[in-house]
Length: 302
Image (cartoon, rainbow, N blue to C red; front, top):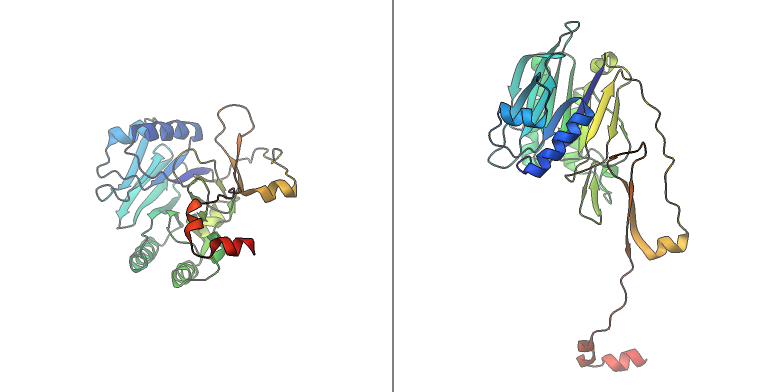
C-alpha cells in the first residue's frame, strides 16, 4: 500500500510569505501533510485551499490558543475517507477509510507541551486514542522532548521526562521509526549550538507490518527551525547518493571552529546546494582600562 506524509513544525502560518513557501513546497511534495504550530486560531477552507491547491483536500484541525500551538492535518479525500475525528489538548486524531480497498487505520498529529507537568496529559491522550480505536495506528509530530541523551546535542544525562517518553513507547509496544538523512530535526540560531531530535513518528507493530518498507527521512529546511520529515511506504526508492562534500585540512578545522555543512532546498538541478558555515577564532583585543587595574603592568612584565 502506497502512502506519503510530510510532518513539519512550520512555526506559524500567519505570515503571507511563509504561507507562499509552504504552498510551493506542498505542490512539489504531492503528499498528505501534518503541520504543527500553525499559530492559527481559526482555520477555514479558504486558508486550507490556499496552502494545498488540491480541490479534493479534506482536513482536521486543532486550532491554536490565540497564537500558540495549532495542528493541521490535510489529505486527499479521493484516497482517504474520513471516518471519525477526535481533538485533544495536544493532538488531533483521524480514523480513515482507504477508498481503494476499505482498509481502516488511524493517526494522531502531535504538538507537545514544553512543561513536564503537562506532558502527562499528552501521554494520557495518546494512550486513550490508541485504546479507544484499537486499530492500526501511528502518531507523529513535534513532541518537544527527546527519548535519549544522544538525541540532544551536548546532553549526557537521562532525565525523568526522557524516561517517561520511553515508558509510553514501551507500554504501547510502539515502533520508533528510524530517521534517515540526519540525527537532529530541530536547531537554533546561526551557530547551531542547540540541536535535538524532537520530531518523530511512532507506529504500532501491526501498522508497520501493513505498510512495508516504510522510510522516514529529513528534508532540507527552507523556513522554520524544524526540518520537514517525509515518511513513505510502497514507493520505489529513487537513486540517491552523497557525492558532494567538503574536505579540509586539520589546521583549517582548528581555525574555523563549529563548522557546519548543511543541505539547502534544491531549486534546479539534480544536486542539492550545500551551505558551509564556520566561525573563525576571535582575535585577541587589548583593553586600555586594564592598565588602571592595580598591579596589572607588573603581572604582565613578569
